[in-house]
Length: 82
Image (cartoon, rainbow, N blue to C red):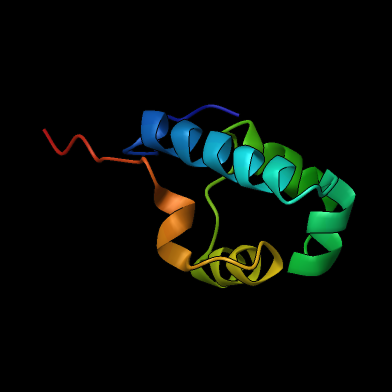
């Protein structure tokens, strides 16, 4: 997937790496996280690889599935707004 229309591709990749870190810390497979968050395993794979811009609904589902606060999903994402 290309990031032609995406304004923050680096931040999306950092977000994906953070999801992967949290998933592994929780001892979950991609499939288990997908099942708990009500998305496909392919979606989890694409999120973790920074290839998918997710919806707020998916963010909430991931937070619930990972038993964490929504804000934790974004650490250490810092936007470069310039």
